[in-house]
Image 1 (tube, rainbow, N blue to C red):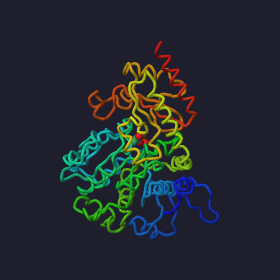
Image 2: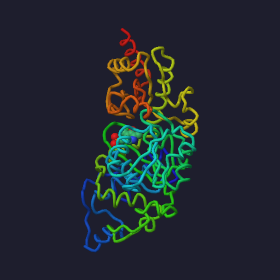
Image 3: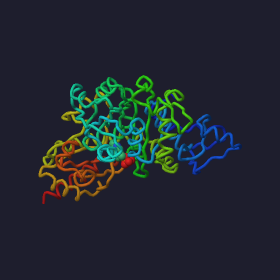
Image 4: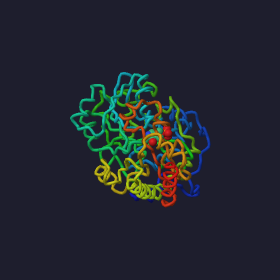
Length: 428
Ligand SMILES: *Cc1c(COP(=O)(O)O)cnc(C)c1O
């Protein structure tokens, strides 16, 4: 782990070329790696030696990029996955099995909500959704003897609820389970959840980390702080022998790296949602400018949120950087330099008016995406969350008229002019 500041880590983290090696991280476009003797290869299969043998388990390009993300988050080990969905699934499934239970904030990304309430339920893992604004006493009631993890997003997509990370970490630890935080929207530039007690961090690298809407990807980072052995009975997967590796015990053998090692050599081995080295290469280019892009996204979003708040056609605006936001104080505490570039708002005239407004935007495009360099917009109730009833929408923190406006890094005056012309056009 280096002592470099964030900006330097964005550029220099991960790939450390030795004499005569490429200055720029190469794409190891190879499924496999060569050995001289059968014995050498056998040791790799037994986890007795470290090395590459098959890209489904590990690849040098991917590892360098995972290492950079690990350094940015201040963790001890990290891995890439094919998508943010795979990251959140692996992060939970690595420590949960059929018959187990997790507690999750209700205000989470629609895809994660489906994953937890539909697909994981089929695997026998139950979830209790909680209001993240609830008191510790209220949150207590969600825990069961078989609860294995607590999950939440630093800033929720699309409702922009800012998580009280310390409150969630305290309650998780009180019940002997780790707190998993999806840090996609804040990014480590604005918030490092490990500093506030989170144990595992996940990312959809598809968003700000890639930043250019080029490649879908995910990452899991472990702080190394959760003591699996202290709660051995809850986490047999980490604390009892794995027969598929001649009975190794991850927590004993790999110490602080046990969680990521298990997720790699067992879950990734068996489920195989790897990020392609080509995508990892593109992600790395995105990461190099993360520290430049994120502050600009936030600066532009702040100005646009203030403009919207003062606009007579706007019914409500939710942006954690606004003093009027319910989450302003939490945002100041956990992300004093800025929250994210996403704003949620509704127009007077409701849902129909909001949809009409979106259709009139010219610079801001309607796309199923968020958090990239280009300004884009989406109406969750008609798009990402269209399977939910109005009641379920409200529970997920999504007002039916909510417009998710993802502010890009164009000149802010052009974005405001685009909003203005669309508002003028709808009025007629
Ligand atoms: C997009 C997103 C995901 C899912 O990531 P994919 O890369 O699309 O699979 C998970 N969490 C959050 C907060 C997201 O915004």
